[in-house]
Length: 594
Image (cartoon, rainbow, N blue to C red; front, side, top):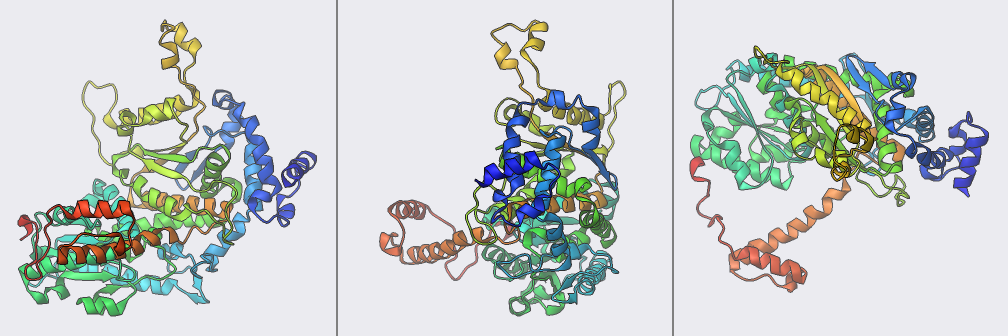
């Protein structure tokens, strides 16, 4: 009945405010505009992008430019009616008021009763962001100023290791949001000329996986005397991070003595008690706050400390300024020209209404090779939910599967599927001016132009495709025509950045963070908790206890240990293999680290 009423209201009163009727709805799926969008799907599926792209006025209205970022939505499966309905959906879902609530410090993370203020991490000194009536910006800048002071002392050789050597190697230990965001930014800046010059003679490595292989790879070739370790753990209890931290501490002490921790290890945490018990002075602890989710923490000390040690605080401040610029746009721009809002609405349209749950992030810039894995975590940990804010099961599919690879590598990997297999909406990200220049005499174009020619071509190939008639006109045999036909009509957006710099990286980060938040606002879910990661960790504790006991007593695991038949067999198969473990008297390290 609600669905039928939605259609009638829409047909009779197309200019009617969806917000009025939405007040009677118990779920966004009960709102009139939701029903109107469902009905609109059939109309859109009858339209091909070849025809939609022929409408220049439509295309012009779907191109937006904000602070140097050029975003083209014209290759999305939308017409002007779709955009009107999606704006109605944003109104019905109260997206604007939810944005205001986030920036004003309301506790929109309801299940943890927390504000969501990662935007405060890149606030200008004169801005105000309140949590429980307290402006948090001075505290944020107090930490940033401390990072600036410390990173400059280390980089200038005033803070040295216990032997007096300069600390030119930094190992950042953390996992999830404490790793993926900083790694994305580090990888993107390594080849940027100004950042690369600032990092001359320095190394930054990340240790995330508890796998001893990662330990060996992260420490290989490093001189302990010139190595500074940054341990990143909000609670200082994350199992993988703390085992890695204890491992690296033992490595340092083995070579430098037990007292080396004070000069060679610092912490990013909120738990001063556990940090000091570990042996790190509270003076060498860099705090952050419970209103910062791990996956949104790259602008906090989590990212700013190791990245400032590598590139200098001045470079990283540009990163914060870029993110702040996009934050301002997200907070103040009208809904119909707000880039994160438009991207979020398009994603909801593609995944929930058109039935395309997977999204490909395709940067035509090798420096952005770690961007997709970061977005993957931010998106899938934020929006991988099955219930709404009231705990009710969602009556529709929410969340999307994100993956990606830089062009043109991806073209030789999975583009076959996105051209002729499943429909996967794509985000093409291009750079106007490359970080590096290569041009050979006699070549038609320079290397960067060759890369970008593919950026432009792939989006059009997905949109237009290639018809049987075109193939016949080119003399393709009938037997091959079905194999060489490209249906086209596959949606994408094109995002063009002027350059890949610290500033534009901040813009890009903020853009995708807010796009993901908008999706959650529309779906009516909490994008800022992550209860889904808890169960596996709890069960791992039980397995850890059993494995330790089975190895110590040289016994088999049985179902009496509380595991299923299949798990018992799997555990016993694993325990049959020899493993390098401590005999409680001797620590074991890879031979190259001993």
